[in-house]
Image 1 (cartoon, rainbow, N blue to C red):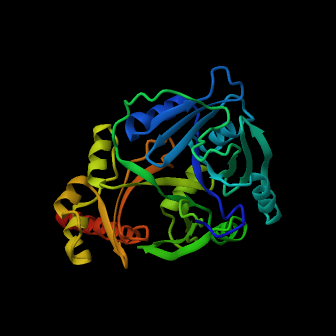
Image 2: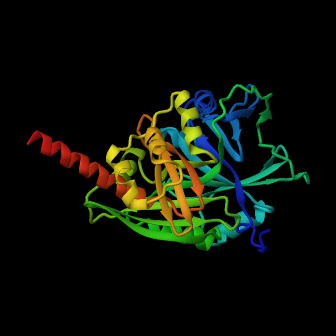
Image 3: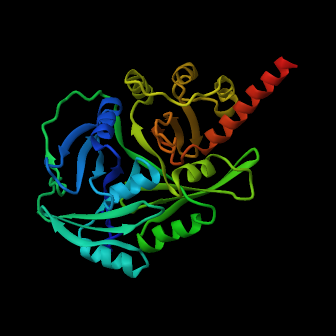
Length: 361
């Protein structure tokens, strides 16, 4: 139980808002390929927007399509394409949380307003991403209402992927924006900074800090490129996304190998891992938990820290701008986010390149 009277520090993850040009198409892909179950939709004829509510395990997504050019979802899609635009937080007192956030320096987007027994307000986060603050006004602890969304019968047709809950949200910000973004979450939102590192990959480098809310269900890994180094994937994201934003979502699985098999069966492709990565695993980590042949066959990466092992894999982006993808993660006690894999992958790729040059010579 959280020991605080601060309504922002009491905030917990409610859902992620995914803005899309076609809400039904985007929701259909999340259901058919990633195993989310559609639980609600906007009633027919809703003039401002169309929304689809999906769940899997403890993860909840609301996909929204604006019906007018001035709707928040329309503006987001126009600038960035489909993507995660809202990290919605449930708080016991939206009015107090909104006033406190603004007093601490947050930019107000929408003042508190009630609809369908749900009180909401909205503040800016980073880039075009926002935080909707949510308070359901009934006393029922099981109340899962969303304003303007009606429940629909479950179809039971979604594949069983085994995703459990949101592990973390990967955020890319422009050079010089890392510290101000972290300061916003610590000073305004009441998050805690839990991790910091600088990752050097050949001639590229990036800085990273991680913040987490007190409830522990919202973790942001915030990445900033080093402008003094050669441009890399962070700069590519910022260019193609039209500024800072959410690069990927990481969902946990209790059995990553089974989840990868299930996702592949639905047509999901993953980023390839060079064979030299697995050749070097015994000397890098020793014991790996999952057998190395199984990791190799599935393309799963493994890292470790002081607390245990971490298994992860990244999907190939199907976004038209190649700016958004998913991660599946299994934690065997590890508390960090796999930075050792970034370095190991780079070294493996360089080894393969060197071998190729030697063959040509």
